[in-house]
Length: 154
Image (tube, rainbow, N blue to C red; front, side):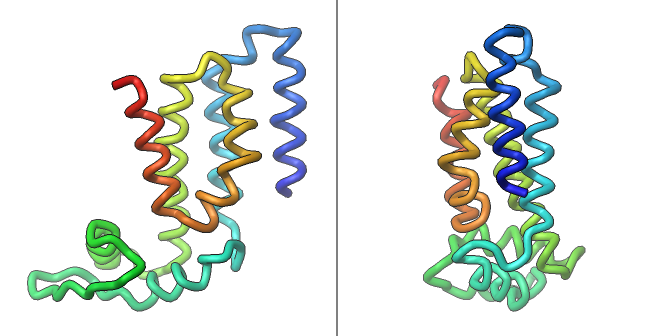
């Protein structure tokens, strides 16, 4: 599946050399990011931190006013609180993998759209270098990278 998406992005990148309007197509960027989101959402037991996140999503308790903060050496307080608040509505840990992939890719999409002169090249470089690591392994660092991309203009 990863090779198919990489080949598709690379093929579109080659075609964009001849059709200049493709390299900054917002619809094409949205389509590619949607494919990356779907790929991140349907994963199961992929990534070195998968079990750590899966266990955390299973064990975190829903937020209430008497919520006691559990100091975890692995997770930031805001991340813990966000998952805990969402746990009041949805309990399934697979939702959280999809939710955080969506948040991460939303920031990446916005950063590419605002900063890049060539959307396809940026998506290709992101896919080749950062997507597996930040989307599958270190989810919180992927979100931080997306926020960093948006903040580059400042």
